[in-house]
Image 1 (tube, one colour):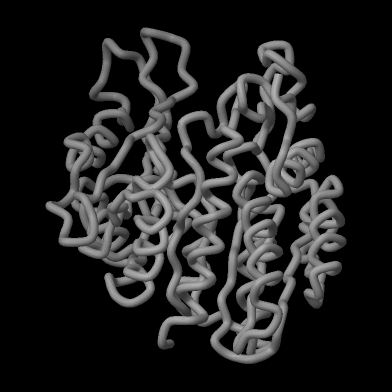
Image 2 (tube, helix red, strand yellow; image 1 turned 180 degrees about the horizontal axis):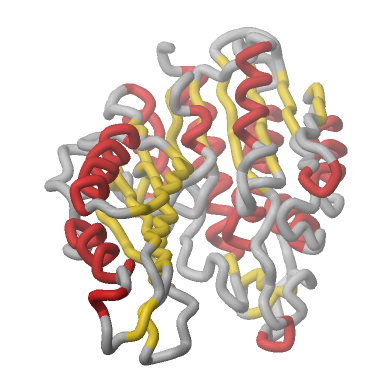
Length: 385
């Protein structure tokens, strides 16, 4: 058994002990507001939504001038599953074998603790500096992401407080801290396709209209799973058919309708509007009665290689000796909300245990990440901007 020995360890434990299953705040933002207030940050709580959809968010800013650097992240977590499957209660933040075990340890309360610890230490050695440091913390990243970072970013725009650069603390590293910086993310477009026909007896197909036969032709262009060759920043766009259902339990009945769902993850070689137009044209060419409901969760974005990517990569290399790769792989993140307005990168902990039973973060990784964040602040404010 090891004890927490650094401020980032202690804060991570306190955050993990708050059972903030999305979208519950569960004391996390109260804790951060208290700690950041003691550091001199101006605290603004930003609730959005009504009733059960209400989400609490926090914006904290130190300073009022440019350049303005922002750390962004979330303190909501996914459900724990069966608590009995965990080696210790999932919100106990038990320390075992030099790791803190608990839901949110990696995704991403650990990184939020590192944000705060790095700022506190950096501020002690830099009591006055030209510029601003802020944090945007939401409780709606693991949920619908409707009343979280998105409206907070709109508020930042409306109040003329948009950061000049944003670092999101998502767990970007596959194996070791220093492996990967995410400098973009793929878009996500989902579709719920309903094809209508006419029920009938399988022995008399000419007296029915089988919607499954038309659905199979509609889905045919998607079955390869790949839609393009990608480009310099993105791997090929991919599609996954996730459900085909008729609700028909009878083997001798042609169903009256069929439903399918699929999701496309696409880079900048495609656009959501272009994909939807292509698919609707194809569906129309198959013919018959159908409804296709498309839902765009995220547009693709990329922060081009340049001063900011070099600065963050350089800070990581200075601390770890590793040269991180730039990547746009994986799912969506709240970085997408900042991307239309400012430069945004993602860098955080090792993601091997995120969303799993016994999610855990190494104490040494928390200290290492804090050192990197502190180095990024130094590089950002004391290199030429």
